[in-house]
Length: 578
Image (cartoon, rainbow, N blue to C red; front, side):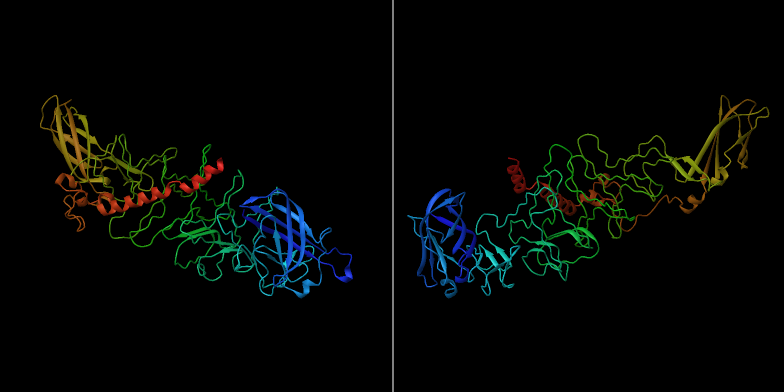
C-alpha cells in the first residue's frame, strides 16, 4: 500500500494562559490517496507531534476520521484527545506532524509547522527566506516576508509562486463557473514593461520594452507554447486585445533571432523553419472560415486586411500561397463610387531576366483556359486591355480583327476603326463597284477621312460583263477619284489601297525585317519547329527550366505537407467529440 497525504490547509489556533477560553486545538485538513485513488469511508488515524530533535511531544491516540473522496478535517487536541501543549511552540521552531493509519507505518515525510502559532502550510514547500510565514487579516492571505516564495511540487520555485506537476498531469487548472461572461478563470495584469504571464526559453527574444502581456515559449521539440480550446459557439478560444500600437497577438517561432517591430500591428508572426501561426477548422455542417482578417474601423485609408512578406534574398520567397479544391484565390471588390478599382493587382518590378506580371497555367484532360476574362454591364466593356505590345505564339480565333486609333479628322471626339489586313506595310484597302455613265466615265467618292489616314494610293479596276480599256483618269483628291475609257452602262469593280500616314503609324513604322535583340539571338518563337526545347524560346515557360521546376515542385510539396490537418490536433478533437 502506497498512501500519499496532500495538505490543503493547516491552521494552528493555540491558547495562551491569558486567553484560556480559546480552544487549544489545531484545525487540520488534508487529502488521502492510495496509489492515486482517493480514499472514502472511516479510518482510524494517529496524529503525532515531534520536536525538532525527533522526540514525540504529543499524540492524539487512535481516532476515527471520515474521508470523502480523500478529503478529511479534524481538530487535534479536541476532547477526548489529550490537550494540546502550549509552551512547546515558542521553544522549538522545527516541530513536525506525523500521520499513521494502522496497521501501516507512519506516512512520510513528516509535515513541518511554521514558527508562528497561526500558519498555512503546504505539503512540499514552506515559506522561503526568513521563514516567518503567512499573515491573514480576514480579507486576504499573504506572505509576511515580501521576498518569500511559495513552491508547490518543487523546492526551488524560481518565482513568487512556482508549481511543478512532477509527472504527466496538469500543473495548474483554473475554473470559473460564473455565467456573466466577464469573470475569467485567470486575470493576469502587469502595469510595467514586462509580461503578466511569462514562460521563457531565453531572455533576450524581445529587445527593449516590447514585452507582451503573455509570453509563452515552448522549449520542447514537440511542445505547444499555448493551447487554447473552446467548445462555445460564440466565444473565441483565444482573445487578445491591445489598445496600444502593438500586436494583439505576437506569435514567434524562431531561434537565435533578435525580434523588433514598430507601428500598429494586429497580429505579428515570425518563424524560422516552422509555422509561427497556424489555424485549423474541422467544421462539417456549414461553411467554415478558418482564418478571418477584418479591418472594422471607420478611418478612411487603404488599410490592409492581410499582409504577406517573404523576401530572404533575390529569387527567393513567396508572399502568399493558397490552395483550394474549388478556387485558389477569390478576390472581390464591390465599388459604390466612381473612382478606380481593381479586383486583383499583380506587379513585378526590376530584374534583368524574365519578368511575368501574371503567370497562369491550366492543364487537364478536357477544356483548359489559362486565362478567362469577361466584362459586361458598362458603357464600355473590355474583356482584355493591354497597354503595350502583345505577342501571341499560337492562333488567334475571333470573329473580327479591328484596328482603332483616334480619328485623324476629330481626335478629341472620335475613333477611327479599321479591319486589319495582312501586308508588308501598314496598309488599308477600300473597294467597291460603279456603273459607267453615257460618256463611259464615273466619279468614285471615298470616306471623308481617307486622305488624313492614308497616302501613296494604288488602284485596281476590273470590268464585269464586258471588256473596255478603263483607266483612272484622275487620282484621289478631295476624297474622290475618276474612271474613264469605258462604255455606257458597263459595271466596273474598283479597289484602292493606301499606306497609313496617321500620327501613330508615323511614330511606329512597321519594321518588316527586324534583327533580334542580343538576348533573343539563338532563340525562337517556336523552338520546337527547329528541333529545340523551351530553353531556346524567346519567352520560355518558367517551369521549362529544370532548376526552376525542381524549386517550384519542392515548394508545392512542402506547402501540401504543411497544409494537411495536424494529426495530433485532429486526434485531440476526435477525443473531445466523444
